Image 1: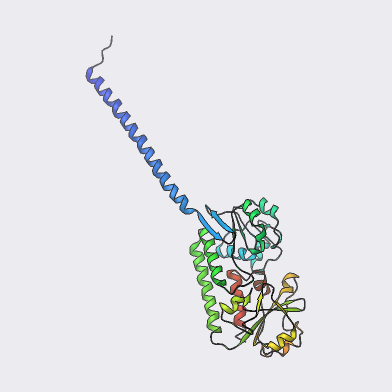
Image 2: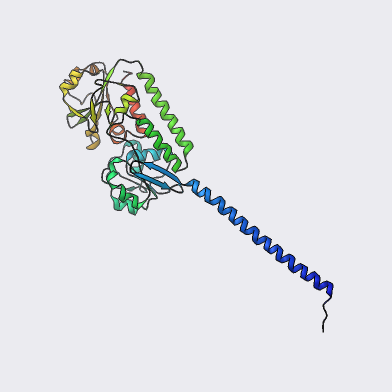
Length: 332
């Protein structure tokens, strides 16, 4: 019979106890580490969630979206400003400054701006959809496909805080895509452009009229209209400060324009956009009554960029192009 030495037995017992204690410590340390990691993840995950309040509801977004569908050209312009890839967009009316998306095969055509193809939107498997009031009636259906953000711009009356609304939306998208520094940079550039226009219009006596051309007919836009921000934010003086025209403008005759006799005319050619025709210019606008205005006589009829003014007009790039046109009216 083999006899175990008492000292060796005691040492073995101590080793077993110590090993168990160490294992217990390791397990406890492991549990503590996992708990700490969980505690770290929870607030971090919560802090990464972005809550966006808009006129149609509240939208929550977790990690930065990877597949984005933009249903309005203003939204496409916002994403372009932030360098965010676009999975899908309507391609019926794409301005030239966003043409690279129209021609890109990886960007799915979502149909028409005013009537997007919801089946195509669903098939694109977006994790974020961007829309405006033009698609508002589809908000519920779109929200069932993916988180959907409504851009709260008022196309009927842009006088009230139009530039601020654009900047706020850009900053919201900057938060959503973790591109806040770039969003702030773009906002600073827009602010500088607005201030440039205000420096030029400040103290100037000229009065301007914004006219939309549609197949030979004209509509005017005043201080409470889709172009109200030109008078409010940019400091342009209107021919009639009481003219209220809303989204589509007030139909006016050539005689009205002649009698109003504006010092500056900004002419937006809707026909060129909607029917893909060459835009009007000084040679092709053969209207004898308009030629009798001070604006025409002094070379201050500005044939505005119809894509920036009519297709978009509520995004960074389009507003900067509009400001360029506004400034032209004071430099001729």
